Length: 169
Image (tube, rainbow, N blue to C red; front, top):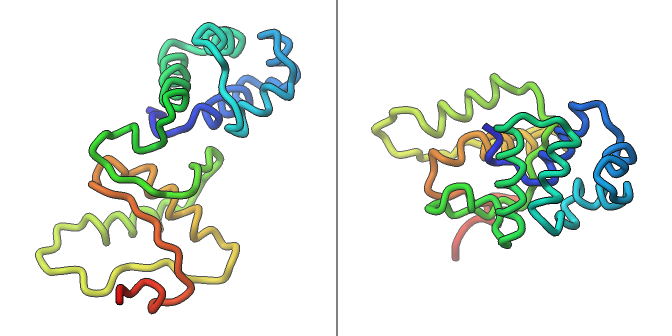
């Protein structure tokens, strides 16, 4: 189930999976490749359900993939964001899901154990990922949030350079 992917992410995944360039897809549905590029960047959406169906047909999508693409286009067209997937969740994650994220399963499982374990004691020291810049800490946390959002009432992002930046005065 890809319900947590944006229309732009799904479109690109399906196009790449089908081995098609943006130019080829554009020609199949009668739009310029720049239009496909804008849709994949999330800068614009197809204007009609018919165009989304044309994309699905051009990509030879099966029924479930077509449904996922249609739902994603409707959520985005309605001005909704990722919190639309689950109406009761509060969501302010300022990042899109990386459709090419791979690996890090051990870290993701460890985070899940720490946050969702059957502990009866209060979490005194919250878990934190740390390390050199550029090693994938943010992408790992973003992936965790998308994989497990239905298990939480809120997904909140707080940006801070130090612990004191997070303290409420």
